[in-house]
Amino acid sequence: MQVLRQLVPSDAVALAELVQRNRAFLDPWEPVRPEEYFTLDGQREAVEYGLSRQADGAGYSQVILDETGAVAGRINLNNIVRGPFQSASVGYWLSEDAGGRGLATRAVVEMVGIAFGRLGLHRVEAGTIPENHRSQAVLRRAGFERFGYAVAYLNIAGRWRDHLLFQRLSPSS
Ligand SMILES: CC(C)(COP(=O)(O)OP(=O)(O)OC[C@H]1O[C@@H](n2cnc3c(N)ncnc32)[C@H](O)[C@@H]1OP(=O)(O)O)[C@@H](O)C(=O)NCCC(=O)NCCS
Image (cartoon, rainbow, N blue to C red; front, top):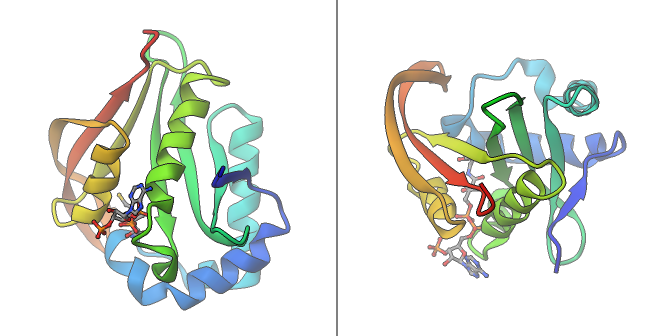
């Protein structure tokens, strides 16, 4: 079963419901979001931003579907850089009630397939704060290897946090 589908504007309705319901679950692992982000208008804006980055070739946005075909989360390739780098960063979240059964792992595996196939990239990277053991397990199951440790790398939940850096290289590189 395929768990990814292209993000479309009408997904904003389901995404707004998910980010509202999962706010306390997602907060410790994400940048601080403005109040607007948790509204339908805020999600319309977030979807539009993702689609415009995709149209510019700088990003790639998919929704993660559960076994019933309902939207259960989001996964993006961010910062697609071409030239000699041919690299992107993957970021994802899954609704708490959809966790623990492999959907996030399958989503990352499918996104890597898109990155190395359709998009022709050489490398996908991801970063997690040291306590995010669930995300590190997803990356390891999806074939990523740790390659670095970055001090004060990203602002997560209001603090500049160190990150473990992971990457997976294209088999055809
Ligand atoms: C990080 C996050 C996506 C991980 O979700 P998850 O539910 O742990 O990941 P999966 O959907 O891949 O499920 C993995 C679990 O399903 C199990 N599983 C069952 N079938 C599986 C299958 N076919 N393939 C892989 N795992 C499977 C695994 O053993 C694992 O179980 P465990 O948690 O008991 O070890 C989720 O916790 C989340 O959204 N967190 C908040 C946001 C966040 O941290 N994002 C990442 C920032 S770097």
